[in-house]
Length: 454
Image (spheres, rainbow, N blue to C red):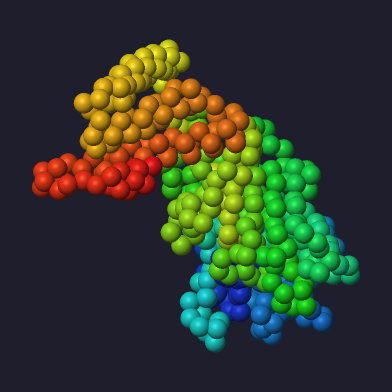
C-alpha cells in the first residue's frame, strides 16, 4: 500500500506509523519486523516497510510534527528519484537495514504501526506493531468495530471531495477495507425530494455474480440535518459480509452488506425512513428478514427495521436509523408437499361441508318447530346462523387472495362472524344464569340480546 494508505490503515486502529527517535527504538522495531515476518512465513527479499518519517522544508521530521533527528541515515533511492517519504529495507546479504526516500504514492510497502501506551503527552513511549497485507486484512474483518471503520473512512473520503459545486458525487474502492463506496458532498437545499442511488449504475466495478446483493438506496432529504449551512456528506459502502458477521447468526446473511452514513451525524429516530432494496433468490423455502449490524453487541438485530416483499426477487428494508444492513435468509425445511396439501384441502372441505349441513339442520329445527320458540331457542338459532355465515365465507372465499379489496372484505367478514359467535355464546350464558335463578325475561330483553350478539 502507499504511504497515505498506510497512515489510513494505522488510523483505523487508532494509531499511526511508527516513530524511531533513538537507536534503541530502531533496534526494537527491526527485531519486531524480523520476528513477525518469520512467524508469518514472509520473505524479506524485495520487501519494504513504511515508517513515520518524511521530508518537509529540507529537513526530515517524524509524524505529529516532531523535530527529532532520525536514528538512521536516509538514502535517496535513485530507482524512484528523490521523494519525501521514507521506507525501511532489509539487506539479506549483510543482514542490515537501510532507509530510503521514495515516492509517497507509487511505492508499495507494508505499514509498521505504533500503539500509544500512555496519554497524548507520553508520545515518547511507543509499542510498535507490524501490519502485513497477508494477515491484517483478516484481522480487520474480525474486529467488532469494522462497520465503524467503513463508515468513518467513507465519510472522510466524502469530506475530501471538492466543494466547488452544489452537489459532487464520486465512487472509490478501498482495497484494504474491501469496500466499494458511492460518495456525495452537497448542499441540502439543492436536492429536492429523495436521494436515489442505484448501486449497479453508481458503482459499476461491482460485478454481482448471483442474486443476494443490495440494489438501490432511497434517502429522504428530510433526514439530513441543517448544520454547516446545509452542506452534508453521505457515504454508501458495499462490502462482502465479514466472517464475524456470518458466524454471529444461525441463519446465513447475504454475501454483500450495505453501509450508509451521513455527516452531520444523524442521531435518534429519523423523521422519515431510509429504504434499502436487496435482490434475493425468493422461493417458498426461504424467508427473508431485514437486519442491521449492532457493533456493540456483535450481532444482527431487526429492531426498528421492517421487511416488505417488493416483488419476486426484491426485498424492501425500511429503517428509521443508519448503520450496516443485510438480509438474513431463513430456510424453512418444514414445507408441506403438494400431495399432502391436496389431502389437507380435501379433508378441510369435506369436514366443513358436513359441519355446514348439520348447522343448517340445527337452524331449521330452532326456527321451524314451535316448541323451541323461546329465549334459549332464539339464542341458539342466532348462534347457529353466525357459524353458518362464517363457514360459508371460509369455504367459498378463502382462496380469493389475488384480489386485494375482496381479500380484505372476506377477512373482515370472517373476523366479524367469529366474534358474533362468541358474543352469542356470552348471551347464552346470561340466559342460562337467569333461568337457573328464576329471573323472568321481558320482551325488551330480546332487543338487548340482539344488540350484544350482533
